[in-house]
Image 1 (cartoon, rainbow, N blue to C red):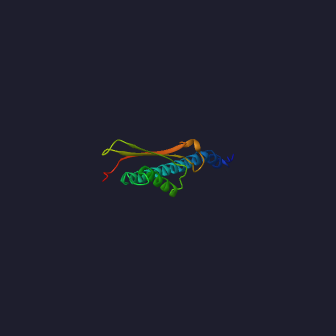
Image 2: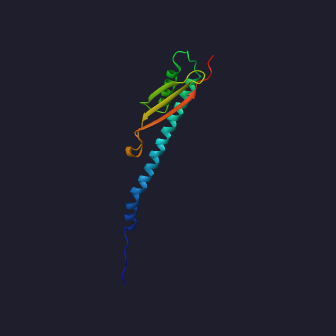
Image 3: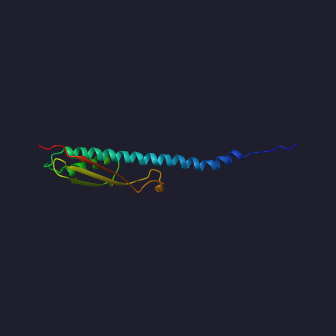
Length: 132
């Protein structure tokens, strides 16, 4: 009567499946981090543009500068640095708009740079509120 021994089979299967599971887990974490950073950037842009369009156009500092300063302050609260903020006015009163575009170099959480874009960006345009 022959006895069949199957020692180590589970360990080999685990060793084969582990890299796939870890890759999936780390990919989910990295993409979650990227989406969180993108959400934070959009939130900062929204807050800055909203401040800029409600500012009096003859105020000091310029509403676009105030919007850019606010965006940088909000991003600093989220520990996001090295943001490039571009502001532009378009149109004429009463249809004048303020457009703000923010670009931030993406800093990966795990270090898998190839999975995510090099930069995260957000852009928003709002109509300036009526000025007295």
